[in-house]
Image (cartoon, rainbow, N blue to C red; front, side, top):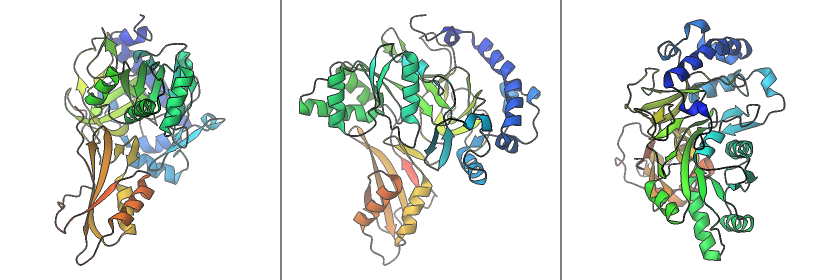
Length: 415
């Protein structure tokens, strides 16, 4: 049991499924009564008829664009949060905008399991480099770390020199933040002569942990694991270790049912097929049933070598829609449309996301309208204003970009 958070992680998969659906009918009946937005979305449904994955699949998938529209009609949460759950809680906003509440209780986003699997233990001193402003990332990790008994310094993102100084002063043993930023801190520590050798473990999210980057950290004696999380439902899946090696795939969190569906539909795909990750939780404070994350993944067959028996995902394989993460921030086609609206001299444009070294890089390839000239510097400034990220602008001749409706093209490799 020393390697597992509790016995739930190793129970028979059939028992897990049975217990989930044994609780689901009562949960859904209460949620429909308390959350009018959920009732409007699902329509007429008999909670007692939902007894399996097959019957659950008869319910519609709630995708973010639909949730955004419902929230606009009934702000801020679209009627999905019972009134009692809104008292004394934090409220967050993700790009879209999508509004999210902080659920009540200890470790409300279920982060502790992922932290435990990554090697975090009571008494660890951890720098939390996720943002504590507007979006919930910083609070998600803060709640999970403190529930596990760790000591947390809420350092937030940016200011790499201050981060290195903090780690050296606190003799911090752990880091949580985006995958890329830890490398920036380590390089700044080396540049300024700060001793950050106390760092031994990290849990990263908000972007892909590429193999070369994991190897870089291993060379510094830091074990880095990743969690796949969502601001709406919390940690969906996480990596685990067995005999000193990272197990293939990510293990789904307990009390969460994960499906892989054909993008744009609610159709469940066979094991191994890549599709959209759809999540159902039993959270009465924010009852999301068949919530479409917009992320692509696939189910790996069999249990993890670590002994955890829940569903395994291959990992984050891109976006089912064109919305994508760059340096831990979502970039949406609507933001690119806003750039074009402010620059009517652009005829067609495509945002290309790549890796440059160990960093994400985005380039807006823009075609001018006939006989129009483009000002790449001005467009780049608008791109940064709309996305809050720096990007390059490349002017290309008219007719260069294919007429295929694609606004964002992610060329990064995730395997």
